[in-house]
Image 1 (cartoon, one colour):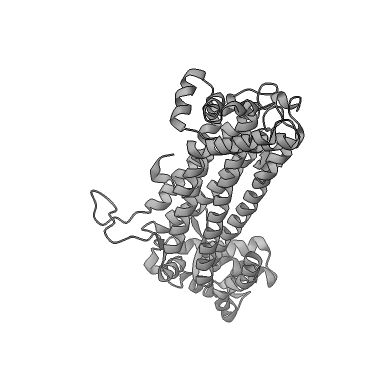
Image 2: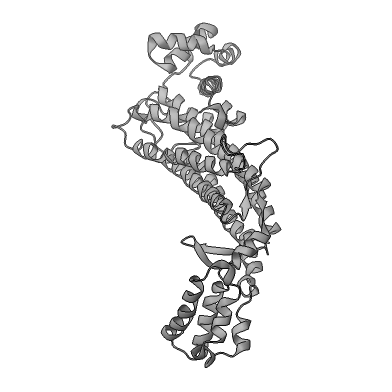
Length: 436
């Protein structure tokens, strides 16, 4: 992944140094397990731990000749270990090392993602409570619907990312598997105890049955979950982008001192961070198709999945980690304009209360069809007027509508134009979402 969208801690998991270090530890722990079983001398296992060293450049050089990364690695280790190197990799196959290493890397990456989600949740919760009662308009189809609060809006995203955290925790169990079962997975040349021993050392669980590789449905599920999280990031980013439009301007990304919005237009303040998040989300979601296609391998093993995973595993986790961090910063610094929200809320001249009038008419005995007809007739008149002529227009039209007045009194009509009607359950909703 390019540095622009990368964070150091996540990137380090996917370096060659870290990969080969895991390989080294896997081989050494396997030797310890063999020594416990009496398969190899205990002193040999100790010597392997003591002398096992690798050189990335040398491994790369050997691989150019062998065309096999694991053999190149083992060759380099053997150069440093000496005679006891013959006990390395006994009864094991390359997939035992490669697949278990991928599990360890994904496990470590997942833990960073969970920490990131926790920070994002904290930021969303803080801003949700800050604007728990800040009135704003709810929209459906991009059109004004009925009043909500901005805290309510944020609470919907909090609940969504809570679900995403649960998915990551579930995924952690799904991908934290160890497979050291030898060629075609039958344990013919390696004792299952070795797999159990190594798994425990890395806080993994043994794969129930591997065909030489860990089944790729596990990884497909994992990248599906990462893609869902990316979709959630995109949803929140898209909401902010829409709300920052000049015609709306209810929220705005923080615009730092010295920041420039356009090379041509000095006045511009653009939602560049959330636009960037929408773009990064597309890249993350693109991993789901190759991950699903990796499930279908030939017989007990082929390597058609290998090149795919070398790309999508680091790129997807690194990009998602960056996106979560960037979104957290956006939420923490988000500029919110309650006065503009209220202004927008009122620019339809009270039409947002149309359902309350509809229900009031039906409660007084009017059929739903007739009530709808009366309310819509007056509402359409408001739509035809420019914004500056709409103030209280809907209410005033209802007050002079003879058919409406046959059913509702002036007091009953005026009573329905109350924002508190729409926010009366906000406390209950917050209790559900935040469990407080």
